[in-house]
Amino acid sequence: MPAKATSAMKAAALGAPPLPGIPQNPQNPQNELEQKSPNPKKEACRVWMSEKGCSRGDQCYYGHASLDPQSDRCFNCSAVGHS
Image (cartoon, rainbow, N blue to C red; front, side, top):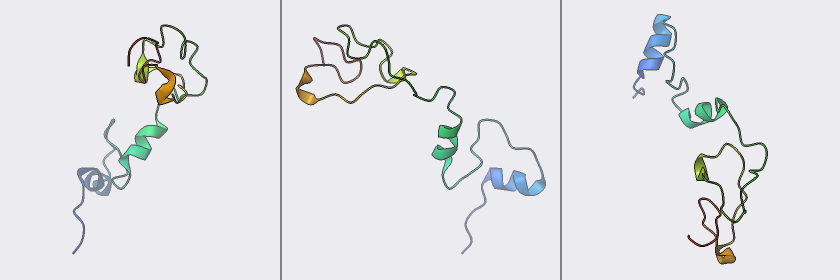
Protein backbone atom coordinates (compact mmCIF):
# COMPACT_ATOMS: atom_id res chain seq x y z
CA MET A 1 0.00 0.00 0.00
CA PRO A 2 1.60 3.32 -1.03
CA ALA A 3 2.11 6.07 1.54
CA LYS A 4 -0.12 9.16 1.43
CA ALA A 5 1.37 12.12 -0.39
CA THR A 6 1.70 15.26 1.70
CA SER A 7 0.61 18.65 0.41
CA ALA A 8 4.28 19.61 -0.01
CA MET A 9 4.84 16.52 -2.16
CA LYS A 10 1.76 17.29 -4.26
CA ALA A 11 2.89 20.90 -4.75
CA ALA A 12 6.35 19.73 -5.81
CA ALA A 13 4.82 17.30 -8.31
CA LEU A 14 2.80 20.16 -9.83
CA GLY A 15 5.88 22.36 -10.05
CA ALA A 16 4.64 24.87 -7.49
CA PRO A 17 7.25 26.69 -5.37
CA PRO A 18 7.55 25.47 -1.77
CA LEU A 19 5.64 27.43 0.85
CA PRO A 20 7.80 29.29 3.40
CA GLY A 21 7.81 27.83 6.90
CA ILE A 22 6.70 24.36 5.82
CA PRO A 23 9.37 21.64 6.13
CA GLN A 24 10.11 20.11 2.74
CA ASN A 25 11.39 16.79 4.12
CA PRO A 26 8.39 14.92 5.59
CA GLN A 27 10.57 12.09 6.92
CA ASN A 28 12.62 14.36 9.19
CA PRO A 29 11.08 17.84 9.50
CA GLN A 30 12.92 18.64 12.76
CA ASN A 31 16.32 18.26 11.09
CA GLU A 32 15.42 20.88 8.47
CA LEU A 33 14.26 23.32 11.15
CA GLU A 34 17.49 22.89 13.11
CA GLN A 35 19.57 23.78 10.04
CA LYS A 36 17.74 27.12 9.67
CA SER A 37 18.42 28.23 13.24
CA PRO A 38 19.35 31.94 13.12
CA ASN A 39 21.77 31.83 16.06
CA PRO A 40 23.29 28.43 16.74
CA LYS A 41 24.66 28.13 20.27
CA LYS A 42 28.36 28.61 19.61
CA GLU A 43 29.83 30.52 22.54
CA ALA A 44 29.14 30.22 26.24
CA CYS A 45 26.64 32.51 27.96
CA ARG A 46 28.43 35.18 30.02
CA VAL A 47 25.91 35.22 32.88
CA TRP A 48 25.32 31.46 33.18
CA MET A 49 26.52 30.25 36.61
CA SER A 50 26.56 33.80 37.98
CA GLU A 51 24.72 34.71 41.21
CA LYS A 52 21.60 35.93 39.36
CA GLY A 53 21.83 33.50 36.44
CA CYS A 54 20.64 33.95 32.86
CA SER A 55 17.31 35.77 32.60
CA ARG A 56 16.61 34.20 29.19
CA GLY A 57 16.88 30.63 30.45
CA ASP A 58 16.32 28.07 27.71
CA GLN A 59 15.53 30.86 25.22
CA CYS A 60 19.12 32.19 25.43
CA TYR A 61 21.09 32.30 22.18
CA TYR A 62 24.29 31.17 23.89
CA GLY A 63 25.31 27.80 25.26
CA HIS A 64 24.58 26.73 28.82
CA ALA A 65 26.62 24.01 30.52
CA SER A 66 24.84 21.16 32.28
CA LEU A 67 24.25 21.52 36.00
CA ASP A 68 24.83 19.04 38.77
CA PRO A 69 21.69 18.28 40.82
CA GLN A 70 23.66 18.93 44.04
CA SER A 71 24.73 22.41 42.91
CA ASP A 72 21.67 24.12 44.50
CA ARG A 73 21.09 26.09 41.30
CA CYS A 74 18.06 26.53 39.07
CA PHE A 75 18.20 24.24 36.05
CA ASN A 76 16.57 26.88 33.83
CA CYS A 77 18.60 30.00 34.70
CA SER A 78 21.43 28.69 36.96
CA ALA A 79 20.67 31.27 39.67
CA VAL A 80 21.33 30.48 43.32
CA GLY A 81 18.41 30.42 45.74
CA HIS A 82 15.65 28.71 43.78
CA SER A 83 15.21 25.62 41.65
